[in-house]
Every structure is written in C-alpha cells, then in structure tokens.
Image (cartoon, rainbow, N blue to C red):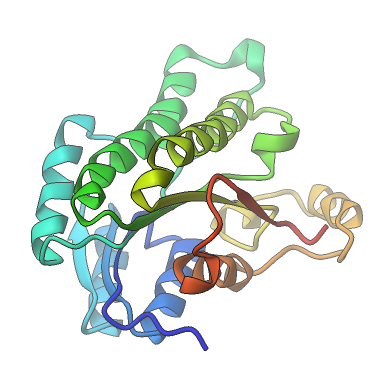
Length: 241
C-alpha cells in the first residue's frame, strides 16, 4: 500500500538504533536516501549493507556548515528534497543545580538549534518545488519532563513548538512539518538505565514494556507516505500508553 519509489529523503542520526530502523524501513519501500551521522564505523556499515544509500558524514553541531551541507544534499538529489527526517540528538544528564552551562548549551545547540537550522535550509529548497515534509524526532520527556534532564526536556519541547510554528508558516506552500514523540525505546541509551529503574518504567507503561525502534520507524513511514498528506503541525506519540 505504501510506495516510496523516487521519494528523496535525508535522515540525520542514521547510525543510532532508531535512525537505523527508520533507514531500513524507508529503504525497503524504495526511497532514495541520504544517511548522515558522525560515527565513521557505523556509517561504513551502512555503506556495506545498503548499496544504494548515499552516506555522508556530517556533524549537525557545526551550524556554520549546515547551509552548505543542505546545498550538497540538494545537488545529490537532483534539486528535489522530498523529506527531511531530523532524528539526531544527544543527552548530557545532570541535576539542574549541578548542570554546567556547557551541558545545557550543548544539548540545546544540537537537539534544538541544529534541528531548526536543518529545517530552515531545507524549507528554502522545498519552497522551489512547493512540496515537502519534515519529520522531527522529539521525546516523551518533552511533554512530561524527567529527573536530571532539564536540558533534554527543554530541547525536545522546543522542537514541538518550533514544528507547529513552521507548519503554520509553510502549510500554504504544501510543506508539512510533524513530530514523532517516542517513549522509552530499546536502544544503547536505555540499555544504560539501571535495571530496577527500568522495571519501574515498564510498570508505568500501559503495554508494560519498552518499545522497539521499529515502532518509531513505522510511524515515520506513515508520515513519509501519502497517507499523511492532510496532517501537519501534529505530534504522533509512540510510547506504549
């Protein structure tokens, strides 16, 4: 039912658990993909596994290079960026009164500011085609807050507000901007959580388990497809209740 043949997609954070699953799903549906990240070894793994994926090493924290990077991607995709998936992000946890300025700034700069700049420069390209979609990965923490994650929660809540604003600004140009808000998903990040704390988390989830990266990827597939063409400015929660 879903066919993404000839759809050109940029994915940031493609080397993580969720990014990798998103890449795999979209690739299986025929999309043309540019996969980005900073982990050289994992990027090489993507090159080996997906022969038709265009892999570009890029650090989205380098704000001065984002415009140039999007220009390069646009040229690679024959001046037609259909979808941008802003999936890259970091955590630097600490209790608020102990949080150093650089711990706050680093998370805000990468999670929020970089997402804005990636979106801004991509929208400029999409405007020429009067078509496009941006899918931003936020987090349940952006809605609920979390101990030791004031910086992360602020960055993810900021992405939601920013996405709603962009959706209002560019809907008339047929550019749709939506968010996906994962709950606690099995990944390298959640693997580090203390077992007892993880058990208490699972007890608070209606489905009584952590999610899988594929659960998030499925929502991304929906938003990438024509099935979501009348949806913008929204957040899809993938958190098991």
